[in-house]
Image (tube, rainbow, N blue to C red):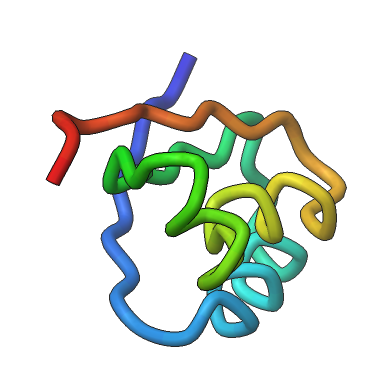
Length: 65
C-alpha cells in the first residue's frame, strides 16, 4: 500500500476539488473544537467537507479554543 501525504491550506472548496482530482482512499481534516454556539454561527468547515467529498473523511478534533 502506498501512503502519501498532501497538505492543503485554503478555502474548503479547494480541498473538495482536489480530493475529487486525486485518487485518494481517505481525506483527513482537522476541526478546531469550537463549541455549539460558534458552530451554529460560523458553520463547520470540516462538516462541509464531509458532506461534499465523495471519499471517506476522517475529522480530527483539536482541543477547544
